Image 1 (cartoon, helix red, strand yellow):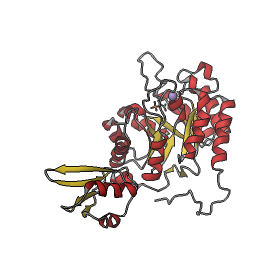
Image 2: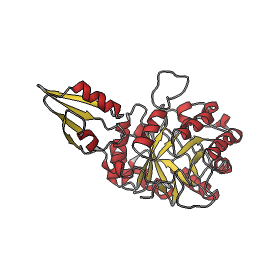
Image 3: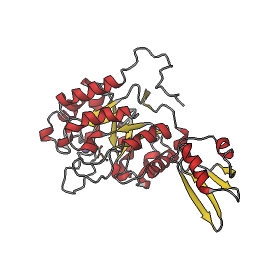
Image 4: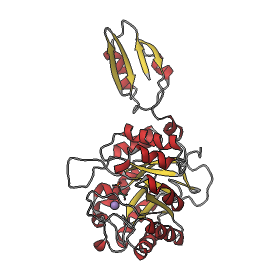
Length: 340
Ligand code: PEP
Ligand code: MN
């Protein structure tokens, strides 16, 4: 929103009043005239409240840079007939689909500890060209079969426009990896599959850039976009990435968006995954996604952060304690947002 001011207005006083309403503002000046912009990240406010602030001449409601994202606010995200945050609170699986038996064993661990969705990459983005980059198309079949055997949904990454169709044939939700958050050609191609998408946050992306990347997907046709925080570039290498739980709270509570937190890629080490799961759920994440492996010591990627069966049980317990699944649906569950 943009506020124009009366000629005699005291800009500082007005800014103070707006700050008192919890709003973030920016003063715009041109010659002798000033206006105040209410930043997008502010909590929602009734424009009439602003019109009554002494010194405000007029309030102009600006159009949002992400109207389609705004439209999905406070709506339950549905994925293959299930509701994120209700039926789906835990997503688990290996970093990479390595071979058929590893995928099945990881799916079994995921299901045993309450996961509703299997994760795992057939196509892996790797920093080094010499690192294991996934088994490709063949692994998609292993992932689908393992998910079906354990009544799990499936999320897996699409790295290239060329693979959208084949991944969309097997996945219930398409994953856009952190490194591709602003690969707009890929987002357009993924949108055309018209499936739910889990959009991971770029390692150095602002919340606004992330929301606008979501807008690209919805504009291109995606059914729904779920935002996944996986940590951003930090100042301390003790953890792999710095988990932005403030950003998660803002996406959930200010923007009303469906949010998943991936503590595995944030921490980079398995001992911190369960505490971060609890923290993520406490600030409002609808679900968490973690990496697990039947034998992390031989994992071909991200072994240090992979949970084995024993470590998965503390994650499963944390999720179950946070929000036990309702026994019988009444439609009145307080956390069940409207299905829009
Ligand atoms: C992943 O989830 O497999 C992955 C590669 O994560 P990110 O894109 O967050 O690095
Ligand atoms: Mn990984």
